[in-house]
Image 1 (cartoon, rainbow, N blue to C red):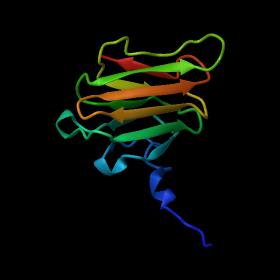
Image 2 (image 1 turned 120 degrees about the vertical axis):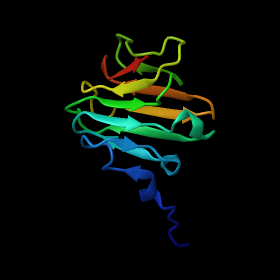
Image 3 (image 1 turned 90 degrees about the vertical axis):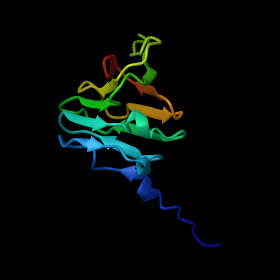
Image 4 (image 1 turned 180 degrees about the vertical axis):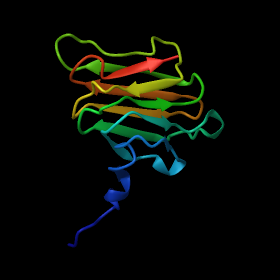
Amino acid sequence: MGRVFFNTREHLDTSSLTDTTTYVMLESDSGKTFMVSGGAQTVTLLPAADLVAGWHCRFITTASPSGDKVLGAGSAIIHGATANTDASGGGASSDGTAKSSVTIEAASQAGNYLDIVCDGSAYYARGVQGQNAAYSFQA
């Protein structure tokens, strides 16, 4: 039996979220894992008019960013929470109110991750970090 490859490299982005250049998400980014490091950066999620049910991606911190990575939706359509994996239990949350952005903070450490999923009308973010202040939600 031969090897079967499913273009797994197409689903891993190791460069778009490693510098300070603004990155605009595309429909084709659905299913990708973005490796995060580098300086402050603005990332624009799909705009409200273009939301696609089932669109999703993951952001994994590979090294502490030297600046915040702001993932913005352009309007208050992001809900979510993150959990700290240590005993303190700290994290970040949208507190039941939709927010316009979620930030991967410069305090984020290698191995932290944030998943974002869209249901066609809003984004839902879920993250895990090993320390407090790795993620935050903004109005």
